Image 1 (tube, helix red, strand yellow):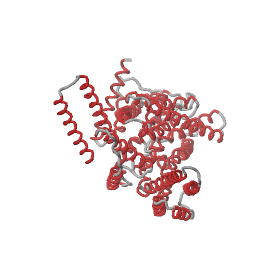
Image 2 (cartoon, rainbow, N blue to C red; image 1 turned 45 degrees about the vertical axis):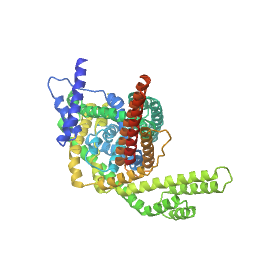
Image 3 (cartoon, rainbow, N blue to C red; image 1 turned 90 degrees about the vertical axis):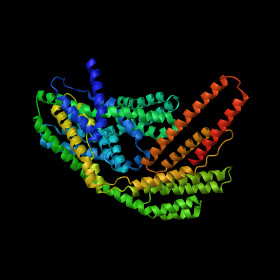
Image 4 (tube, rainbow, N blue to C red; image 1 turned 90 degrees about the horizontal axis):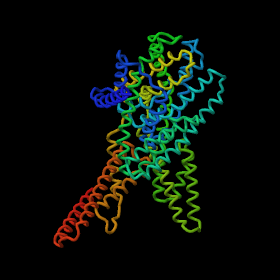
Amino acid sequence: MDFVILAVVAATVIVAVTSRVAPRWNVASPLLLVAIGLAVSFVPFLPDFELEPEIILSVVLPPLLYSSAVNMPGMNFRREFTAISSLAVALVIVSSVLLGLFFHLLWPDLALPWCIALGAILSPTDAVATSIARGVGISQRVTTILEGESLLNDATALVTLRTATAAAAASFSLWHAVGQFLYAVVVAVIIGVVAGIAGIWARSRAKDATVSTVLSFVVPFVASVPTELLHGSGLVAAVVAGIVAGRAKDRVLSADQRVSDRTMWSAVTLVLEGGVFLIMGLEIRSLLHSQHDEAGSLGTPGALVAVAAGTLVLMILIRAAYVLPMVRVLGNKAQRAQAMQPRMEAMEAAISDRDLGKAKKIAAKAQRHPEHPRTFRKRLLQAFTKWREARDGAQEGAEQAAEQRWNVIESRTRRLLGDIDYYVRQPLSWRDGTVMVAAGMRGAVTLAAAQTLPLETPFRSSIILVAFAVAVLSLMLQGGLLAPLVKWVRPTVPDPDELRRQRESLSEALAELDVPRKEDEGPLEYKLRSVVARRDLLLDLEDEGYYDPECTASVIATMDASELGLRLQLEQVDVLVHETAALGPEDPAASRAEHTADEEASAEETRELEED
């Protein structure tokens, strides 16, 4: 036990030091941790290191995926859901089958179902490994697609793995496999939504920020464990719970709870992510020994590493053949959106002026344009019909109902305009597609999934060694070459001028908000209420999709810090008031002097507020 404690402490220190040293050496910290693990694994006096795969799949990955999902911009996830779902489902299945055929041609003695099982193990990109891609300066749109793919493709891969292993022992049924996949996803979505809502509800009633953060650590397991017991995808359930929590946290949780979450989850994510990469390196000697002691083998370790290198090349080619055409389709979508932009801007102007005739005329013309979303046209015309019924109706509150309907139409129009602006500002080209191909790295999920293979699997140790070699080569080669590739290809990157323009526009929108001052309200209370009102306005603007997450996230963090500072000042004032009251009656002259000083301080704070 003492040795285990020392090992955990040493690993934590290594992760912390590496996170500080790696940026100075211009090396991604996950790559350095894998290298350290490989070196340490061959130290003679250390025992072989072997970790149960269930610890990775059931203990480490749920909180990591939950944290990534919480921090993923919900608006961008919705915009890219088609691309994400295509990569997370179709590409994983295609890759599993093609890789399976490749392995079957290479090793005829290994049955095709087992070959497809190995293909399913290697197909999903790793959510932890995409942390390398986040640090090389790619656009937010590409980052969203990569993170969304890696968060959701585990379910497809694990269900495909289960189906392939079952087919190796019995007959294969396509409809059974499809039903199993749909069941796993539906169960995960339902339980994930319930766990996310329940977690936010419980945390909103926890007054203490530390208690709230502790409860947040429980949510991913509340989602994943029941889902696994019902044979669903626990990892997808944790992701869904994170998306639900991420959508609600800024409106429901208090400022101190959000600040506490950022601090604590950053530390937890650092340790868990670093530990995953360190473990990958530490397991190499144990895998080599297991492969050497295996009765039958698919080849020598050197030959298996060569097979892994060839497999990695084939995986990149398959991904390129799928991703590059998909990027072309998405690029055409941006062009159609740009063509639709003038009509939608005219529609927004007509709605803002409450000009029903002009707005309906523009909507009718839009029906003749195929690029205009059909669902939006239908909802828009339905909204106009309900508006007219509310206007012409004799029921009480008809004008109020009509105005509410106008607000709904206006909100939908602005959201669609925000989507158009997003696609136009961040178009995808072959350069972005090249980066998406190179950033599809494998990692801990591949190794953990390989170790879940049944003990009766033929050539089990050789299969696990191939999976490990592919994951390590993927991290070292793709991860190590990603930054030079980005510099060479020059994909779409965040425009600093655009971000500056958005910040200026956001500042103007927040400054225009008029927060009336209440009677007998002190300057600190008024300033606090103004900060809260401006944050609510910012969240409304964020929901409409007008501002990029890079712009709004920093502003929200600043507002949280300002709110905490104001609340602390108010608490200090309350303490001083109570202490003064406890002293009893005072000298009238001293009281008048204190009152004058308070008035001067209040006037000074009011001037500062007006300047802000």
